[in-house]
Amino acid sequence: MKFEAPVTLLFDNDGTLLSSMDSVLRCWTAWAREYGISPEDFAAVELHGRPAADIVGDLLPAERVPEAVDRIGRLEIEDVARGGAVALPGTAALLAALPEGSWAVVTSATRELAEARLRAVGVEAPLLVAADDITRGKPDPEPYLLAARKLGADPARCVVFEDAPAGLEAGRRAGMGTVGLATTHPRDELRADVVVEHLGSVTAQVTASGVTVVAED
Image (tube, rainbow, N blue to C red):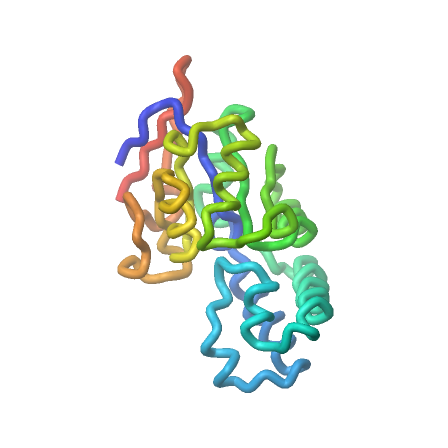
């Protein structure tokens, strides 16, 4: 599928630019044990593509949430140095082809955690919208609309790259084009304009009129 120029590219981070799934499972499993969360309750909660505060809020009373969110944040940041983030195929080549001001990273992670993971895989985002910047996380469209506003982009000319159903819903609700990446969820769970294996299936063509994106299913 081709998204004609000019388009602005908005990338989720975990599961899109990089993989931290092993780290996420390792840290959240340790966290759940610390807080006495039963395996059944823990398994019933969707971890991927949601802010930590929302996940913790599903599992603990409200008065325990702030401290528990800080704890999982510390565990995940400490785990980055243990190989907790690995670049996914196609990330480096696609980002290298994009001009300044044409893309941003929009993540459900905190800014500190997102920056640590991006540094670990050698990505320097020109704009990062993180959980700290918003009041409503994905699947609410707020994170993507904020990124578009900061870049001065028309939401209708933005394309969202996401691996999680919640993130794709956020992109659709923002009125943006969507590319689903089958890196963490089965294809039949991804509602998007087009679904690809990873960013290696996406190319960017830069012309005087802007960036055209081609995503090959």
